[in-house]
Amino acid sequence: MTDGGFPRYSPRMDLVLHTYWRSSAAWRVRTALALKGLQWEAAPHNLRTNEQTAPDYVARNPQGLVPALEVDGAVLTQSLAIIEYLEERFPEPPLLPADPLERARVRAFALAVACDIHPVQNLRVLRMLRARGLDQAAVDGWAREVIEGGLEACSRLIADRSGPYCFGESITLADITLIPQLANARRFGARIDYPRLEAIEVAALAHPAFAASRPDAQADADPA
Amino acid sequence: MTDGGFPRYSPRMDLVLHTYWRSSAAWRVRTALALKGLQWEAAPHNLRTNEQTAPDYVARNPQGLVPALEVDGAVLTQSLAIIEYLEERFPEPPLLPADPLERARVRAFALAVACDIHPVQNLRVLRMLRARGLDQAAVDGWAREVIEGGLEACSRLIADRSGPYCFGESITLADITLIPQLANARRFGARIDYPRLEAIEVAALAHPAFAASRPDAQADADPA
Image (cartoon, rainbow over all chains, first blue to last red; front, side, top):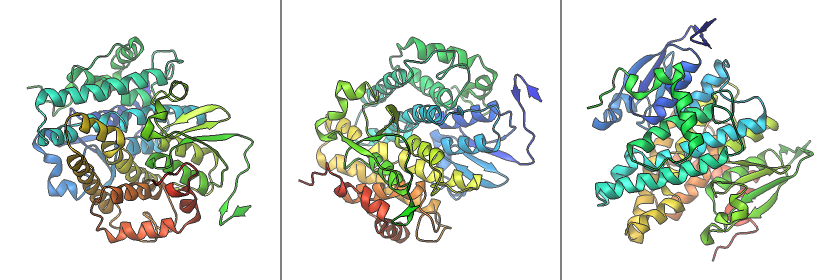
């Protein structure tokens, strides 16, 4: 059974995604859910007003971060762990290649974003920098430095690859992490002069799964 | 076939680990290799003198980070991606539980360390802070703040668990990431008043795999 070109599961389970429209990590999970054709209910938390630190949410996710995915009431946290869970439970379409070396390379690309770029430029760190007395220009410069160095490494990790997506003809976990990071790059005015990364972004954003998962398509979006 | 209580593989492959004795992420991979009973050759890179930025190494690992694992010449990067590869190729002993929800929880714990603590307190970020004019005391305070908040969340992620290790009777990926992070906590004088985490550390460091992988047991160790 397909819908919009990808299979649709009808699991006997309730999926509730704790999300925030502009969270990169929540965007990753939204994309994976869309690719797997899974229906979910949104529980939005406004990070700008620190709603994710409310006691009833922290009781569910001790890190006080989004995303978290409730699966029949069981709470899963950390975007990449959630996506690996979805991959194991709902294998089609695969978000990781079959070959172990290739799986390792896709995961490494995703971790290069999820460990070495995103956490070092996210809201929490930028707030810590402001608390140390750095002004907004210096904080934005920090984010740009982290993003630009990280994207350069990412572009080199896939320098020997071709095709519309990071690792070829199919969307993988690599694309799922790259696209939100490129959006962050634009928000901070970081230099993106990597034609291949930009071409991947164009291809991805034209796909219905990314169109459905992008921040400005979320019910809690507040562009103001 | 067992040796020291864990199985030993004799793969027809050459494993070369690009490492640095004090790197938390390299320590994770060393522990996984020891648990799987795999033999490897060390290629050390001194991070203090930026040896990991040498052109011949960056040609292999564009991120210019350790660890990287060469498998018959194929270079794998990012500690968690390398460990997932080892888990897929050499399943015994398992470093992840069998149940999908439990696998997700172990991975989430590991990512809570590998994304939300370690990259925000590592050498690269501390150098960036120094370059912004923060003095050494302020930089150390930054590291302590990140580590203390992170360890508190980690302790709550396993608050309903018991047993010698994070998730029970067996060493998992969670322990593999926690132990190096606790060592970092001690280096920065961070508060560790989580009896369960400390008990896990005692149990882990008494295990031969951690004894073999710990920083001061490495050939490139330079305590001076």
